[in-house]
Length: 102
Image (cartoon, rainbow, N blue to C red; front, side, top):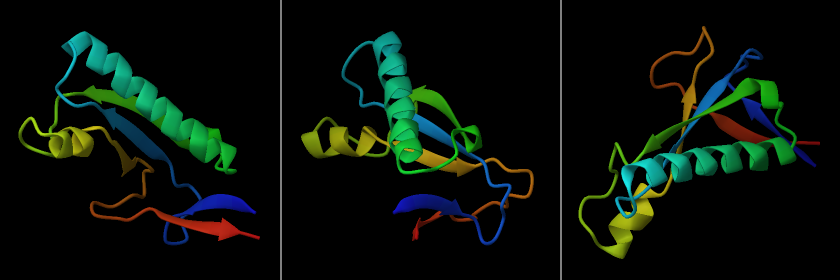
């Protein structure tokens, strides 16, 4: 089976994957770590059959915290990747849908 990205029937869908890190480490290290996280997420999706030309990546470092505080739970929430639709036809609040293609 191959995975494909669907966008409410939009074959021109492109996405930006933003990688993030928790607050541990220097800001420079966290920017690099977050970029590796975004690149790794892209590589995983490409390995499932998603066209790599439809995905770009960027690093957010530790700039936007999802979980407040210095607990392990907060750190886990902040180590993440966000998917943002970037196609010209993308609308605010639109959802990415993953499905398995046969």
